[in-house]
Image (tube, rainbow, N blue to C red; front, side, top):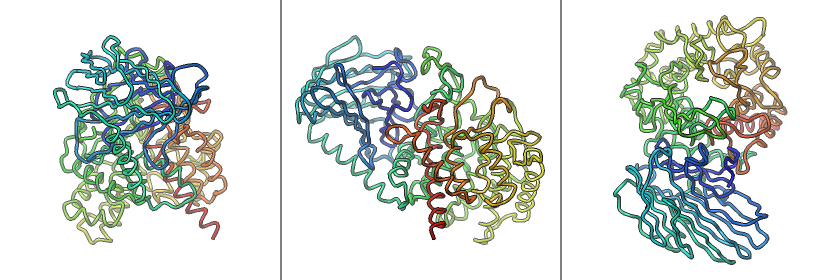
Length: 607
């Protein structure tokens, strides 16, 4: 077991309420329960010695590993090839009544040998509450009960597995021949809850068939029939895995504190629901035909508008816990060394109190993205939207922290103004199309004022480009969304000039940086890699602007930077490695958007 495998050397399994990362060595080195944003049970990715892990691997020298997903599912297979045989570990989390929040979650790990004879090694070393709390172990030959503070974890086995005590942890050696199987099922539940029933070969088969069937049925709802079927399917499954089904709220990523630069301080907690990221995730799924997810998120977002209760006093704040709680106090876990020494390790997120005005544009689009969503919102839903737009007419013209959550002070960010314009534009169209009561005149005045302001103050004559914030000359890749939201035509001379400037300064071999921190200090030390969201937004912008051949090249090139099972982190480092929290919803939603835009433009060109 490596101390710190590469961030990208993992697959993701989950049950739509929480998720686990499994390395290509068969190590579960990240798992929180009962929710994405709960304290970790296994966090070896953040501290090899103190974080805890659950390994099922193959012992011996000259072992080669391969990891893959069962096609069109979230069932992960880790294959071990040895001189004596071939063994596999099949990992999945059964999806049982996902819309009902529960404290009980199961991680199923099935060992099987497909050729020869293989010797597996098992070690389960939970570390409750991010490694801050101890636990008691009660052990039987086929059951280990780990009793932690407020949480119990039961490890139950099937087949020739004898668990042995190793301090407060357990280990086992399992030798299997051709065709033989064994399994270890980890169940996490509230302290004092009824112990899980012992698994059987029949129950495991039922769990496997049920999990596989769930993903097959879900994916059949997709309307996508384009050129990148497998890639888009995997991105869609990843977005679904990152959505908390009881509320419909997606998280930005499954992890916290994985660094944007190894050894750096840009280590944030992404296990929460950003209004921006979640809105765009739902629009990506909606583009594929997954309407139920859009309905669920619309309800969640509508409740945030109606209930208020933000820490900022604004109608919305930029992020919430998955249950809608606005309080995300940020703290550091000084007892954890961080991924390869990347400290501090942070939980919570202090950026929740920031002002980012662009979220109102994404929120309005999410609430009104299709006609049936608008109609289902009814009169009360329309009043919620109209109330936000009325408020925005009085409050849009303010400096804020911007989409990238800079901690270097507020600026008049062009992207924030762009999305305020998008909110007004969408509201005006809806009010007119559906004859709804609205201050159309006030919204129109605000919309036009924003546009004129961006065209005069967000444009640099020297750079011949739209810039990051008023009064500056720094380029910003977030503005790649300008044509996508309709602010400018994709063939507008100003836009094509901006795209040329970005290609010269922000693009490196089709990979795109968000901005240049040296030219626009963001209040943080260190650097970062290219931002994968922006690389896919670049593809989208190229396609819309008629540069279809370059767009297709950039898209295909970007796909080579995915990990071995098709997942992306937040960033790509200088040597092509995955950096930041993993997997990241932002990247996968942008992949879907780029594929849809590119398919549309390629089809048009062929016609």
